[in-house]
Image: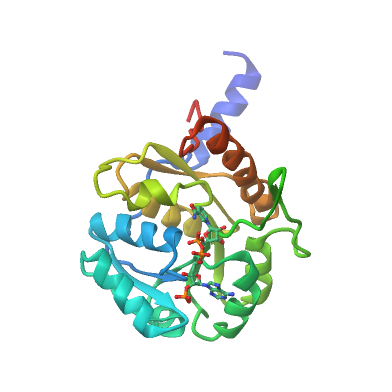
Amino acid sequence: MTSTDGAQGAQSAQKAPAKDPWDLPDVSGLVVGVLGGTGPQGKGLAYRLARSGQKVIIGSRAAERAQAAAEEIGHGVEGAENAEAARRSDLVIVAVPWEGHGKTLEALREELAGKLVVDCVNPLGFDKKGAYALRPEEGSAAEQAAALLPDSRVTAAFHHLSAVLLLDPEIEQIDTDVMVLGEERADVETVQALAGRIPGMRGIFAGRLRNAHQVESLVANLISVNRRYKAHAGLRVTDV
Ligand SMILES: NC(=O)c1ccc[n+]([C@@H]2O[C@H](COP(=O)([O-])OP(=O)(O)OC[C@H]3O[C@@H](n4cnc5c(N)ncnc54)[C@H](OP(=O)(O)O)[C@@H]3O)[C@@H](O)[C@H]2O)c1
């Protein structure tokens, strides 16, 4: 052993062993709220999570619409106005269209205080050439959420899922990875674990919120893939 090896050995003897990145928390007891849970993405996520045993409350601008969607989903899902869904949940997924994103979150600042917020909003435009990424002033939808919700812990995830696959009851397993972004490791790991509750899915740490724009924008590419190949494309991150 060279003296350099020895120095490294002594150093690593003092250091705590690196944490296993797949050692994720048990999130089965968390109540999950879904803002805009009456749309295909929110409803699909609510269905998949509830089917895996998670308690889910879907939110809407109108309580009746949320209740009707919750009944349709079954699996113990409840429906409420967005504000009540936020208040009653530990973790809140934001699944409203980009056009309503800022206004919705601004109005729920109090209800979302202290909560873990998971933004899955993709700011996209569409023209005759197809889908393209918009450039939010704050950098991304997730960064807009973080700016509007200073008392919440904001993460971003679930951008690349196909609502069609999520909602199809014949499909048992959804083979895809979910990129999870956030500032705090514990929060990111909670969201990774939540993604992992859905059979076939893995939640993978993909950086801080300042890199959310690329992840949100990539959906424009996936839409192009889907159109050309008549597919419901997802993503797999290799070698992890
Ligand atoms: N669809 C997908 O495959 C998919 C995949 C990944 C991510 N996403 C993202 O998930 C979000 C939801 O997608 P979606 O296709 O489910 O959207 P959507 O159907 O257009 O909207 C979802 C729900 O949001 C509510 N809503 C509509 N306009 C609103 C506004 N101006 N302000 C507040 N709430 C409003 C509506 O519920 P109420 O009328 O009941 O309030 C609607 O049912 C989008 O931001 C999208 O980028 C979608």
